[in-house]
Amino acid sequence: MRRRLTRLAGAIVMLSALTIADILTGPAMLGLSDVLSGMFTPSQAAPMTRVIVQDIRLPMSLMAILVGMSLGTAGVHMQTILGNPLASPYTLGFSAAAGFGAALAILTGVTLPVLPWLTVPLSAFAMCVLAAALVFAVSKMRAMRAETMVLAGIATLFLFQSAQSLVQYMAAPEVLQAIVFWLFGSLLKSSWNNVPIVAVVFAVTTLAVLPNLWQLTALRLGDARAAALGVDVSALRIKLFAVVALLTAGAVAFVGTIGFVGLVAPHIARMLVGEDQRILLPMAALMGAITMTGASVASKLISPGGVIPIGIVTALIGVPFLFFLILRGQRSHW
Image (cartoon, rainbow, N blue to C red):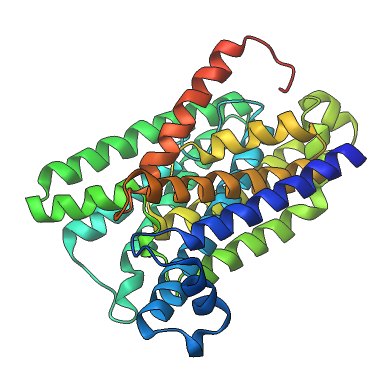
């Protein structure tokens, strides 16, 4: 246990260092003293520096942490309840559904009469919940069996990807550009309005799962053994499935489609601390945050003076790791 706690502390230190690096880097090319002044003594900083640091970089860094923690947590939940190393909110269609919802809102141009800036995020959130409901309904017909949920999720992924393609085909060139930019996934949409919403969703869903940690650890022994230990496997799957849907919807609704974080972070966490959910869950959240923050720094360093959409960078990180999982040929951490 001491070794695992030490690794958890190391992950916190690494995330802190990456967060500082993320705030320090950016297309504005501000110096270290300017950034520190904008953070800790904003009244003494130049107006432009204060705006860049307080209103752009800090919300982006906090959003990267929250989205990474949400997707990392959702990924470990999904892999645990389905018993599948390739399960994640992205591969089971939730992110594709959110993308379709956002694309539909952008194509139609409809906005809410109050808080119009929430139109696209709410549309993405609604479609993500709809996708979860579809997978749930199909799985319910087969007593929430893990293999049925995986197949229903894959079918949902193809359904919403097709719907996404149809919307893009129908869109005018300028609208298509806006849709594609959203689908790339970008932290540039972060603001002090939407960061608290993602934080509240993550906090509420995490608190909801805390009483079930030992049951999740038991579930990794198999359905039969977990049931013998007194776990209501079907009820646990339904609860975690709802939690995963909320975590994914809350994360991608404001920043767009972010792939592979929910797949990569849980595997790295398992390699470091094993299967005990008391340590695995916070480690998966930290690994998700580290992946997102590292990708945010890379997105600004790859193209100095600009910011590459973070969804592209996470895919570049995730695809080689997926190949590694396929070729590794052993189950020492699964």
